[in-house]
Image 1 (cartoon, rainbow, N blue to C red):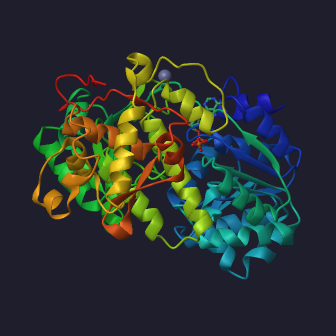
Image 2: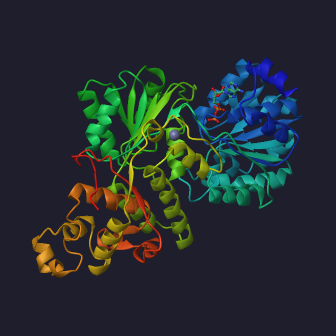
Image 3: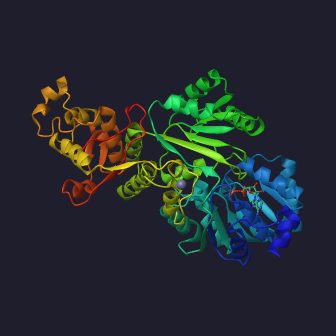
Length: 515
Ligand code: ADP
Ligand code: ZN
């Protein structure tokens, strides 16, 4: 029966991976948590069961524009659906109330804000609601980037109505999952589906930042006329980058949370409508975008976690056709992201977890073999080397960097963990600056021990050390590097370290370390 509905109502020939199991569980009235990647086809997983069940299914969704699109599509397919949002005209609202009274409505979309109104619960009771579906369920997480306070009322609504609830999100990390279970299901474990995280058509690539503006411009120039998104770490950068792209002859817009709502809507609409437009944006751009043919996503700055990375690149290639990504990262990104965690309002457990998610992303950036194996491994999926990432395309050469790493760690320790990478490299390469002389660091036993490597090569080594969380910039000490617990076994010579001969372009001739 689900397959018949799928064909008759949606016109699809078959289910995507994972969809049928979820549809069956939801239709059977189980509590369900489904974690599916963006573009995986979540909406079908609550819409189709709504048609199989008696009564009305309420869908809570955070985005008015998306709700309206879905209602329109459902109605065109002949499904009795409506949305109660602040964007409604009075006539639209009256029509929905009438349909609810007559018992003809099957799917009722509702903005979370509506739950705050005292009339909503009696209304839903009278309407004969038999199931709740929650889209973008991670919005219930106070620590997530999309927190919506009204989502906290959903658990209460479920208890008051005594109906099953299905929750959907693309955010896969353990803690968000746990928070969803606590807040939406009152801690009663729902049937959980974690499916289909691979997006094999998306090519994965990272590059250390060398000259970031040029790297982005080259990436874009190689894809003329293709629609894409460049994510930037700051609002100012979205504006300057969009200007530079336009100056280079590409049609580009900027987008960030500081723009007024009309300008934002206009930019979204243009991106959706026009061919081959580029948007330079902060992460504020994306959740409401439903454009299947985005051909590429670039990150001019490192995302904040592996989950954020996955969600952002996941906006490319939803049509299943080849799409490309490029993520730039450098020591400044690592410093900025660490500082954001350390200086944020979270408690210490949470900060540790955020550092760990950042570490997972840095591990992906500094990977030495297939990135997809690592990425899917993080989400609990197994995979074989993919043949569609930069490291499968050209496997990097690696070298035993144990000695170099020991030298760098020891230079940090001996200078009191009070200095940033630049000064540490001056010590290692024996560069007699005023600061070195003032501090007496020319008398340290590590002074000049790393002369065989150039400054760019040391930068690459220290960046990789930061990427592996062997040393961390301390925001309270202007980014001074201190060593972490993971570094001690290396200093003691108990484990060795393999690093990538680097792809930093300035490091010419090619990175060939002399041991
Ligand atoms: P998301 O998981 O991001 O919410 P959507 O529910 O919007 O994804 O689905 C993404 C796209 O995939 C939509 O265009 C939808 O029509 C399409 N889709 C979903 N399920 C199927 C299917 N079984 N067969 C073909 N296309 C599908
Ligand atoms: Zn690969």
